[in-house]
Length: 258
Image 1 (tube, rainbow, N blue to C red):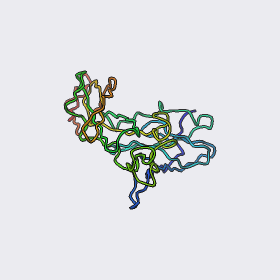
Image 2: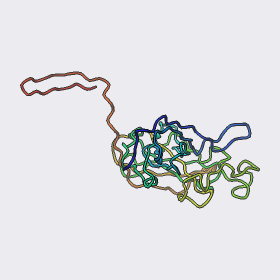
Image 3: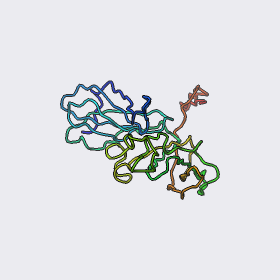
Image 4: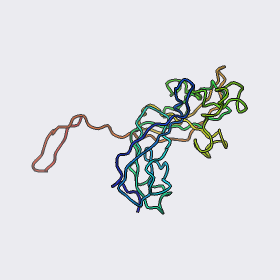
């Protein structure tokens, strides 16, 4: 039967902190939200989709809330949708039925695995080939170095990393691991974390990207290069449209678009 949208209403998302500092501040990476909704269905299960991608399914027909991971980047809005499904289809991915997410039109999203082996002061730079096929390692595409560990509490500490490299006493309490991060995308346990970076708008073309990690001493890692990525930005909406001419004999209307 597939996704059912009629009957699901008042979808809300509340961001949840990844950890709490001693002064009451919170760790915002990784970003997770509590999604809530109302439904007129009595015997349907529910699925949550983030930017058109399948996120999670409910465990029973009475559930009306769920925790889901959302992109780390704050550059663009996040689209969260909730659909009803039949019980025997609760674990089926129906992403192909959803209109593709276009908010990042002309942008490329890179997902980087954040290993606990990386030093606390590590940064990353993103490079690309400018459409020429050869990556330019002189001028980064990223506007500024990307901090791998923006919050010390995200870095595992005593017994798992450099001594005193994180919040002493609660080391790794806020670090992403089994059940919290991208399970299966990194080493088992704490090394299951990923961060995302979104590029500025790019013109139509075929691009290749690369990432290098650098420590505080300026020592760079080997490059991790991507394959070819095709970028096709969507057309900008017309700001003004007027009738340029109309031919009665051919019944042809010509519009002027700006």
